[in-house]
Length: 318
Ligand code: FAQ
Image (cartoon, rainbow, N blue to C red; front, side, top):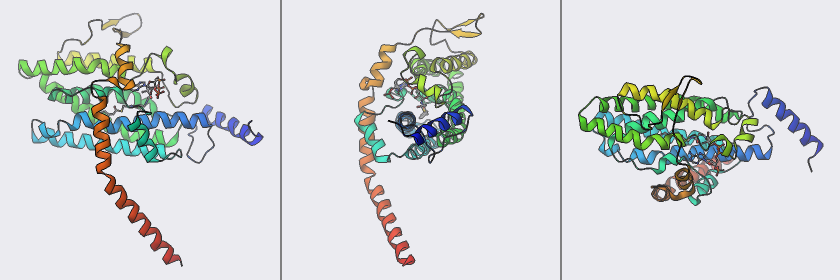
């Protein structure tokens, strides 16, 4: 049973959400709000970190020194995003090791898109353009999320994602205006990444388990289908500029509602991928476990340093 104090806390929490005030780590929050934030934010952090793998795969094979330097920086940016988001999630009272354990055991998800392979250099262009493009549409909306540390992390992350999107589109522009083979590479990579990019926005609103509560608490500010449509509407003209064929023959401007109509996502594939049976799920987690194990000495060194510092400070106080 709730105590009187707790009821008052709940009323004040609801008022703050209503008034668009941010909830901060030391503020009262209902347990279900906290858990839902941990779920979404950690999923987001895991996505940034696992998302380094498909692109990292091309660092040694980038076609020029300039492309290599840019890709290296982009992948490092994604690591940075993962770190902000893990830190922001830890402010909800969960440890980093618990978060990593949930990723590695399959209890926590990460964006389905990163379970697809990057077959050619053009996939790097398509990821920057479409995947970062879809991520920005979602994350601009999340800049107004109700949890302060998450909202602030999103502001910085969006600035960097915006650069990533442009560098991806620039790769696509060069390929689309290149030789017939390069244009075909660009076309194939766009076709491969189009549907998985649309899946990044999650299931239809009618099938979205968390949207109701997340919208009420202003963790999510706009629903999955609205954001997906926004992404489609802004991306189709970019495909036209590239001079590529549409990846979905049903894409058609609808005068009546001012949006593009489109074909249906293969939801069976979506659920297979998010439940662990996509083309690269096994490989992604296996690689994460290996890298995490190899980094144990760094974590040990940090712990030893912290212990020494604490002992030194205690001696100084005494
Ligand atoms: N993949 O009830 P909903 C990036 C799960 S960052 C996997 O609608 P919700 C940068 C969902 O978790 C990309 N799982 O869920 C980059 C839930 O399962 P659960 C990451 C998905 O949370 C670029 C279940 O389905 N961005 O790309 C997906 O209300 C290039 C039911 O779904 C974010 O994470 C999916 N696509 O809405 C990095 C943004 N969709 O948890 C490297 C923050 C749904 O109960 C290279 N997250 N699920 O086990 C969000 O905005 C939301 O969590 C949604 C899903 C919109 C993804």
